[in-house]
Image (cartoon, helix red, strand yellow):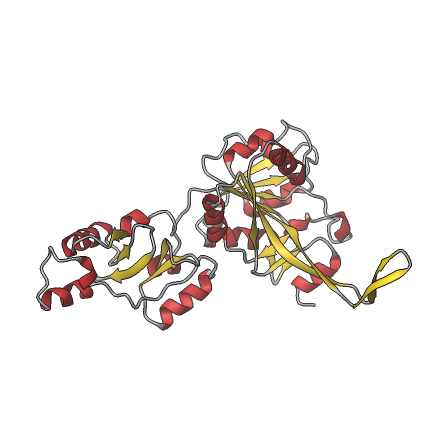
Length: 344
């Protein structure tokens, strides 16, 4: 929805004839009118053009005579489900996407929201860990295969990726990996293509990347295999591209309240007394977007972790960005989090 602006947009200096030609070419029933700075000024559909012609305007008249300037748009952070609700409620077939300044970023199409447009980006799920903090549940079952609401965690991750059109998925496996392979096989029964990265030893949260037989051609998604999340993959990929990042880290705001009064002091002198202060920090969610060039920093067939790789990328002055995940997210690393995910 973000990479086809050129198929829909025309400048405000264009004619009604050009708008008709673009409508005919894109076959989606809408044209988006922008200025030289790509600020969205209006939308045009077939009915708008017919009304302008009936009012006496010619095909060579300026397109502003038929543009609908009272349009509805959403920003890039509005989730798929909410966009779909708005479009269904108002009987829209199209919904422009703009940033906070009104700059056109892309467009939602109802047909594509109901269905799914296949992406060429791939995803890699790290599912080789032992899950020792979840013993004894993980004695005979790898942690990503623990069930939440009747489905394995890993299956929920795969279905979430499929919802954003990602059909090729790599899964890194080690501990009890055969159980993951037996369940998902080649992915065809789930509507995707699954390939396995088999670790001969525990390679950390990034070491398995060095075992990829083929380097991805586009930015790719990495997720830890013990997550439940509703992160907007489309928006995160768009943010990665827009900010020209080598790595984008999915981050979530975490607040911690100290349950006591805190004293700010200098030597023996009290400066301030703060009652039960709350501190806020961004935490790493285990969800990343990597550009293919980031793989240059992964040591070959050695154990490595994503924070170490990112540290090397930063030391080499490449851009690492943060994407704020506001949607649901649970890292199921301990019994308490598993109970929370299961609603217990």
